[in-house]
Amino acid sequence: MTDKSALRASLRAAREARPPVDIPVPSAFLTRLKPGLTVASYVPFGGEADPSPFARAAVDAGCVIALPHVVRRSLPMRFLSWATEAALIAGPFGLHQPAADAAELEPDIILTPLVGFDRSGNRIGQGAGYYDRAFLAHPNAWRVGVALSLQEVDMLTPDPWDVPLHAIATESDWITP
Ligand SMILES: Nc1nc2c(c(=O)[nH]1)N(C=O)[C@@H](CNc1ccc(C(=O)N[C@@H](CCC(=O)O)C(=O)O)cc1)CN2
Ligand SMILES: Nc1ncnc2c1ncn2[C@@H]1O[C@H](COP(=O)(O)OP(=O)(O)OP(=O)(O)O)[C@@H](O)[C@H]1O
Image (cartoon, rainbow, N blue to C red; front, side):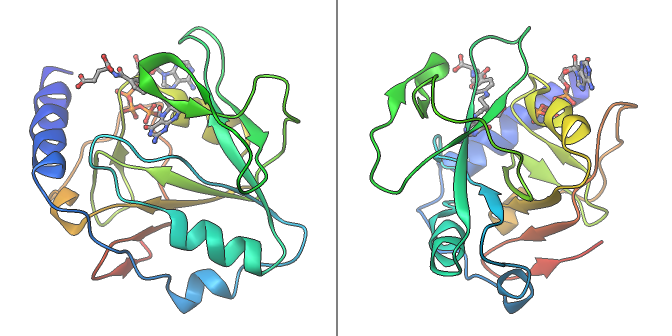
């Protein structure tokens, strides 16, 4: 646990020290997009990789976009409908989120912000367990991490509750464990 939080702190610092980079959208991602699918994106903060090119490709393919919405740790994160250009509301931790009464959607693809990852698809996030719980609640969703390559670590030891990613996109790689 201490290991995980020390690693999280150093990876966060590395991520923030780095100028923004564009993550290209791989063709393997594009081919999964179908009209009417729900793609959960996120609004990046703290140097997180920007998933907008993926969300834009999804909109162009006729998909519906959802964004995560959290209230507090004891409550599950929900994915709420977001129309491009719709206003976002200030939430906890300085987050920008859809309004709490936006429609809740079942995501088919979850673009996942990462603090760290390895080539087996293990990940660490903010440490609140929101995404791990969401992955259990939406087991059929395709879990795609979006990250900078400098967030890769040799090997993460997963905790029992950790749910691995199906794929990870970085500025230089498309990793499918
Ligand atoms: N862009 C983005 N949106 C997201 C997430 C995310 O990781 N990235 N989430 C993924 O779960 C949810 C928000 N979860 C969060 C959970 C904890 C903290 C947090 O603890 N922040 C602390 C500590 C930061 C630090 O130690 O530096 C803070 O702001 O005080 C922030 C967001 C939903 N939306
Ligand atoms: N399915 C679950 N049910 C209940 N609690 C969970 C579940 N998954 C994770 N948690 C709790 O969440 C906490 C944080 O887990 P972890 O350190 O793996 O965070 P993380 O993977 O970085 O966070 P996130 O999933 O939000 O990105 C742990 O204390 C864990 O007990």
